[in-house]
Amino acid sequence: MLPIDAQIVSVDDHVIEHPRVWLDRLPSKYADVAPRIERMPDGNDAWVYEGEVAGNFALNAVAGKSPKEFGLDPRRYDDMLPGCHDIKDRLRDMDLEGVHAQLCFPNFGGFAGSVVQKSKDHDLSIAVIKAYNDFILDEWCAAAPDRQIPLMMVPYWDVEATVAEIERTASLGARSLTFPEIPDRIGLPSWHSDHWDPVLAAAQAANMPLSLHFGTAGPPQASAEAMTSNFTVAISLFGLNSMSAMAELLLSPVFHKFPNLKMALSEGGIGWMPYMIERLDYVWERHRWYNDVNKDVKPSDIFAQHIYGCFISDYAGIFSRNLIGVDNLMFESDYPHSDSNWPHTRKVLEEAMLDVPDEDAQKMVEWNARKLYNFPRS
Image (cartoon, rainbow, N blue to C red; front, side, top):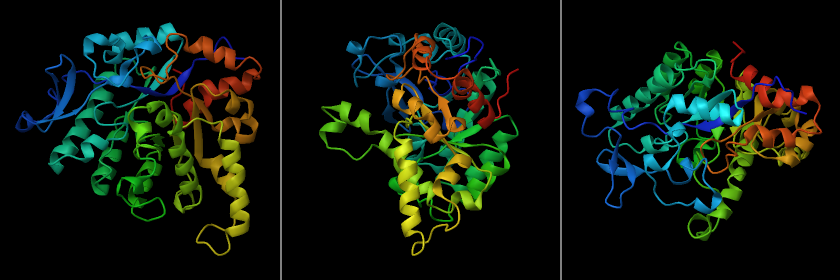
């Protein structure tokens, strides 16, 4: 069961940036195009970037609401918990749900920066990324260094700039970087190319694992209705992206080139992992000889050294933890998104861990995350 002294570390939560994050940090020459919040004619708030509406909050800021109030409709700042965007209130909300520390993904820029990737001005896109990272390091995480794990965005569309930002932020205390889970699905080279080698080398040198949040490579393959009138289908299938990312990575040269690199499949769930690990080994054993893949190390052995699964509510995965590897599993609360169990996170987790040995439970909810993200107890 979950030990009383376990400090829950959630490896996937989200920050809703306050309206002045970029207005206060970008050079004055970008004053007219910087990301800003504007009140729309319908009375809701929206991000405006380079003069165009670039997004709203919808399901990304519904913690504390009944599922009957969920929806894809736009929202306002005064229609969400202050803890979504104010770090002092966030800490209070963490105390209420029994979570000690969080690693937070961005909101405005997309979970890995997809909105910023579409910038018309390349130099502006780099400046927006740097300003966000400065906000996370100097404001959000600095307010509670023992409770917020610094996760960085990078301008992944520019390899040289990405390497520079990894090196810059690593020197300032960054612990991880968010990155597209399947780059080729958004028009970039795949994990099988050498395009990403400088980025992966820099991340390895800085001891910064990549956090691959599902959806950073776009929606899962699904019907048109799944993305519009029946979004339940799409939400249920997003974990397929994590499955695809795992297969691509374990059968690619990535971890052979970078033996100390780690990656987390953020919000991808874990119940599917035993099958996928077994299937990858089965296929590899029969087809490795005529394919351009490593012929000496099983995918399951590579997984054990490099990949981490992340779960919110996953009884099947917890039950199958020994088939996956207890050392490769981490918890996430997903505050303030629609999958979050706030303010009952710890209670729900305790129920899920009733039949789990204390040591296994504490590894999954705390120790594995602290080890991966180099975030020891203070």
